[in-house]
Image (cartoon, rainbow, N blue to C red; front, side):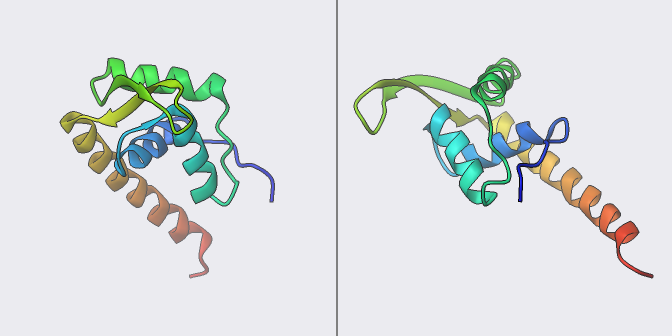
Length: 108
């Protein structure tokens, strides 16, 4: 199976959900999304970092510098309280969306 194109807004949801598991740097966010999607979502740096910066400007995530697993300086991102509320809202919207699509795809 090839990679799937992300629907607009889906990347934000995937990033927020991934960060709900704890603070991590960008490379780890992309790796976990790839692993959890069985390789269907390969998030390129050119999409990931602008999304992280946008989420930070919106107040949904915050960042701080730390050391990565290989002792390199890296920016670690984590959810804020506003980010957790946004994640809950986006998950609810996504669940309604997938239920509606399934209703059309499934035979009557």
